[in-house]
Length: 78
Image (tube, rainbow, N blue to C red; front, side):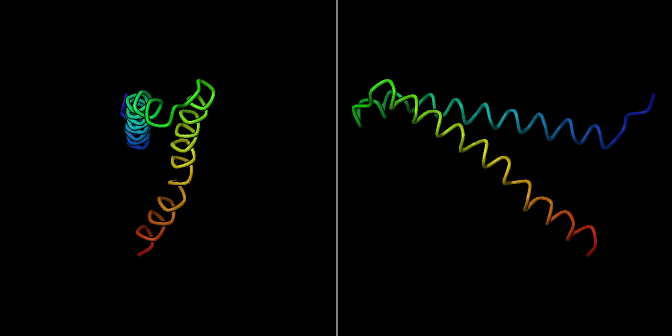
């Protein structure tokens, strides 16, 4: 059985995306204690802050596909 190059590239990109999302999660988790003490956040506001940051990483991941597609199309037909 031969390895499909498209499937291999897709697997690598998905793995890197998961790793970056995990890195973002760790960074956000590392700042929660500092944010809580600096801004006297209640548990509700702390949760909203963390969820807003995580939703930001999701939106950034989704929106990154647009310039990636444009760049790929531009280089494919150049």
